Amino acid sequence: MSCSSSSSSNPPCAACKFLRRKCLPGCIFGPYFPPEDPQKFSNVHKIFGASNVSKLLNEIEAHQREDAVNSLAYEAEARMKDPVYGCVGAISVLQRQVIRLQKELDATNADLMRYANANYGVYNNNTTWNNNPNPLPDDDIH
Amino acid sequence: MSCSSSSSSNPPCAACKFLRRKCLPGCIFGPYFPPEDPQKFSNVHKIFGASNVSKLLNEIEAHQREDAVNSLAYEAEARMKDPVYGCVGAISVLQRQVIRLQKELDATNADLMRYANANYGVYNNNTTWNNNPNPLPDDDIH
Image (cartoon, rainbow over all chains, first blue to last red; front, side, top):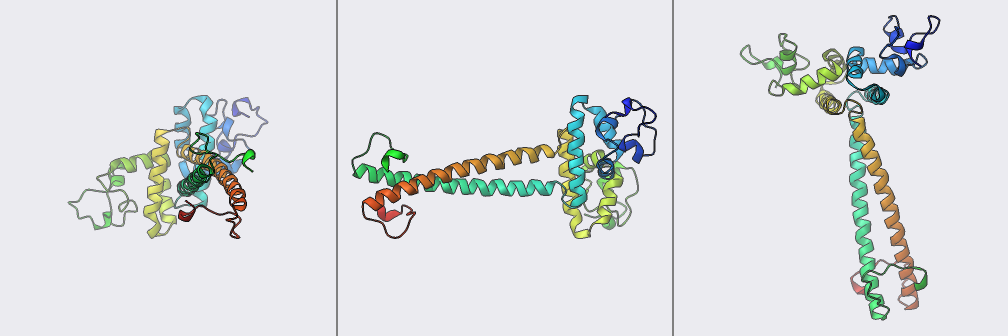
């Protein structure tokens, strides 16, 4: 819903209501800050400031503004919850998770290689070797 | 280096220099925005605004301010590089990486289970079964 389409009986967007100003047609905030979600603008305003957000929205293309506002709202909410680290805290957690998973994957792949090598020996000794140096178990070995 | 320890011959901190104001003893920005890194304050100011940063720093404990400034500087730089997604773009990339690694790990674990089950059959038939339902290959099986 856009402020530009508001009739005089429609409420102003959440930004204009918060800033106590008239919501004029073509309001830059209107399409992204509906009146039913006042917290979204209040967070973004507290962390970035309405003027910075307005400048940023004017510097990017219209079709990217919704994504921009949503990412700003995400960052703002994260900063309200964690004033020290904000969403950079989430980045640290995810980075540690990636490192842990990569280590686990490497270890599991190493185990798999040991099985493959062990099976190579078992199958080779049992003369079931069929030119595949790393035979994978399938239904017919059982 | 803190503004509070600056003598009159020392340069003001990067924030006070940028804002063209006198860097007084106890300046909230001083310890975190050294004059030799003007870009750090300029980014943070452009994205969050000096007033919001000052408010945020005053609301948290002194020992956490350096981490807070560094996370704000990280967010600000990410937003300058990517005005639409900022550091939320990095979060999306990391989240996809975690999902991909978890899937790879699950698949590798499933392969490992197949080997373990196949080996169980092989070892069981060869009467080398030793009460371990999932024997891992080790040096003495070779």
